[in-house]
Image 1: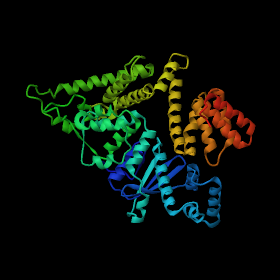
Image 2: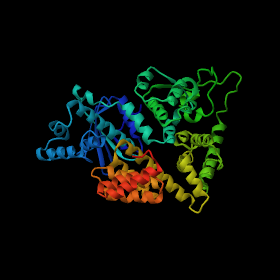
Image 3: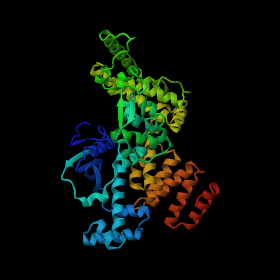
Image 4: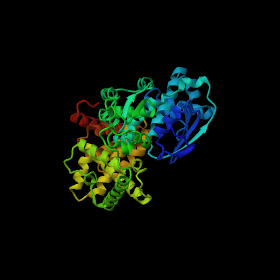
Length: 491
């Protein structure tokens, strides 16, 4: 494990990777995370989060309890009034008013830490600062958050499949097997059938990439990332069934070079020519990178991946993996290329990754294909892909009850693609459910959603709730009846 810097950017070290490294290093102290005007500080004991502070919402615990239905809005107002009059903390106010007992308070504070960690994992950018300190007292133990469980939930919710695979890429051509740490880590993770199939394949016989093909759900893929980050897997350059055979040529791209050189050729193989072949390979690679870079603006997403519009999902994934082997910065690190060529390769790979992100998503691909055959062109397709990514992140935060956080993603999604009913309805509902509620703005978005999609029963039902809160009972009843006529299960 590399040394952990005291400060850095989340664009360079992802938060899941940082948290995993801090846990394995048994870090004690504070981790300050910031993005734009949002700042959270987490207190870590032996690498596990035990507390958090946030300047973004001083009444965050009260709001969290209202969202969870533990206390009412009236209870929240009483607690806030006591906090202001006596200058006490939220926790003390909730206990004094009898809104929580001590055990309930502990659980609420743990949920708050977990929720804010999950929120921060959704950040694509930001900064972190570490401040090491003395270990906290044993009294902090009840507040400990299971780091690996949070990492799995956060990656499942916020990372795309290609992000996970790209992060695991340096090891995918090796052969993975479980080690002594595996059982203790695995039992802390949420499982499903896909994860069970993936784990069964971790016997050192298939490559890590082959095993990952069985992790077909976001949960199982997130668990695979956690198992790797936690050091629960061992990797070999040879399969348990391969005997003395050297690994496939792809190992040269991803494996540790020193290890790869130690593999001896079979008796019936001649030793490789270590003179001219690397030079010729570097020249050929340089020529191909330059050629692809010069044509970059003229290629659509299918052409970038060397596919036609009828390509299957498996073909898209295989083509992306092949491109990653050739253009990813890690793969080029020891290829003997000059800086300019590496920069060109980085731009090519960024476009290829974007192409894969769109084409591997069934909905985004259909919309891209439609835009590709119309006058909208690739710019609109890219805009839609960005809007869809923002919407998905906002949707996850909505389900978690983080309505203010969801708005940060849903508002730009609507701005990018205001013609999508689902985006407008999600933003409208978040505006209504957040504290303080904004029913007028929520109504505006929900009415827009219904106008775009008159059969959107969910949006009509949500609009009826918002209208009723404003006091327009007859209109609310009419909307509710309309929603039920479309979907009798509503209400």
